[in-house]
Length: 308
Image (cartoon, rainbow, N blue to C red):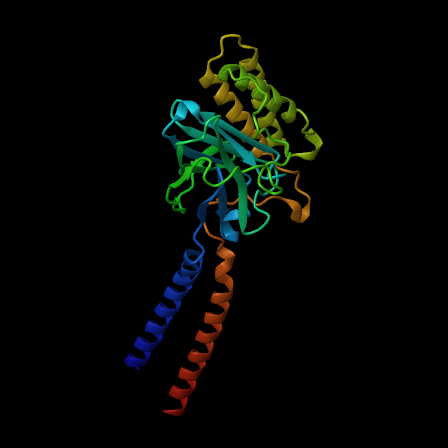
């Protein structure tokens, strides 16, 4: 009798361990990945995330580190993939060699397993001898109006490009040069960083004002109105600093990214954290193991009955 209890107890513990570990193992097999692929004088940036993660990503921020042996001669810009998001913006900070990317919309950014952000393109009047190294410095996702570091992703090795050796990157179809609602291509805009930020903030305010209250949840629309008001106050401040303009722009972008459609049955957006797996992945395993446990328990009962 005691031995049978031990068998049943051991089996139950094994089943519980399987229920806990199998979904984790399945998720671990689909680790999020960032790829940097060189192409001519450019570097394509591609994100590949498992479904449980990507379906909840509506806004993200990425910082690329750009190092050049001739920074004063190297021009840097980011060409976003066509139609990638409602807001797609890039800002290059030459003083510390960082290229900041921001994507936001009220639809999930990922339409399939991989998301091609576009490409970081490098140019110079005289390319001879210029070597550029590109790496990922950080990746953050936006939950509500807060940015959080993405924990479950490893950054790729830095890629090196010798300008002019791979041929001009050009603007081939699908290379990230297409038109979208964002402002990834800053050509033709003011070279004064303060004025450029003012123009960008003004453009984003105009975009934010196109959202209709009847289409979105009361809370998200109220947050958007507050962000618009704060952004306008900063824009109207004649002596606003670069940091103040950037903060106002980021807050407004986050508010846009956090907009939620009014709930209509199954159309309500799930409010799940992007840093956790999908618990529904465990249901098939639980069902199979529960059935198996029932069959084994019945077999043990019959064996005990006939051995009386």
